[in-house]
Image (tube, rainbow, N blue to C red; front, side, top):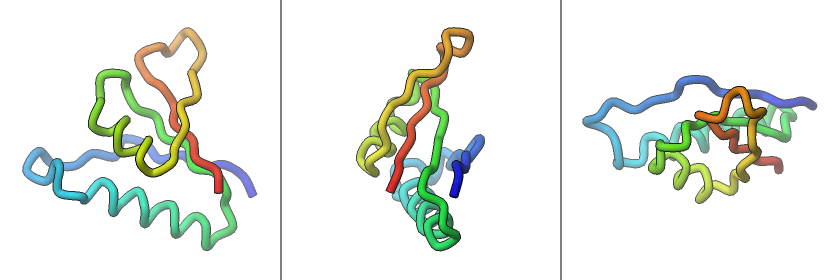
Length: 79
């Protein structure tokens, strides 16, 4: 049914590492699945190792962006 993309999702420093990001992404994935969407694309900078690890643990795969935007990498997960 198409692709959806989240933009600029961040946790306050006081909440980093407490599972809020995982809970948020899982809730978004669930809501989109209920609406019939089968793909979620996230963009993350190369140096955001914590987010990249989270997305990888949730089953997202890295998809390189065009050379003009090398500071970010996309992560995509299809059900």
